[in-house]
View 1 (cartoon, rainbow, N blue to C red):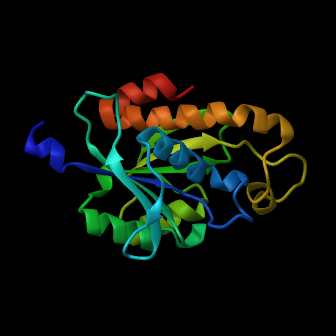
View 2: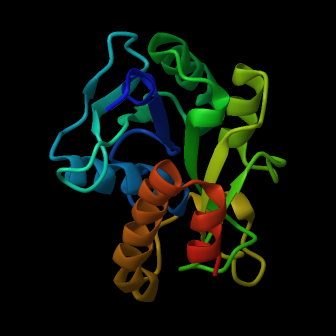
Length: 200
């Protein structure tokens, strides 16, 4: 493995709200996906020395194949203040925006589907808005996990901060698995191949 490869650290951020109250909410899909990635890496989250996030450090990829270093992160702040902890980690690990992947819920995509992209707007998502503000750029990768629009007249805020339906909970493990695969693919194969594979 070349020095260049070994030096390339990726920062994979699962966006969500900390604590058991929020654990099963639609807004917390990012946390669920980084939990799955941590499981694949065989590690548990621990407090980062900044005190602002929990992290897992390791290599992500098939055994026996040279794989880049990856830091998985969950901010300890609420969603709308995610940017500060992400910026602190990016500075600590010397990761530029183009090697940051944010995993988040997306209202404009049907539940169970994914969209992968780089850059773009925040679409009213407070976690992305906070990241853009703190990093000074929105030019990072996004793994957008669809949650669909709220039914009837339910407010968006109530919808994202509520648990998945019984039907959705049966499908959720597949979406989490796909999103984790998409992160691995982005790091190993780049944006175009990942988009053609996952942008359903």
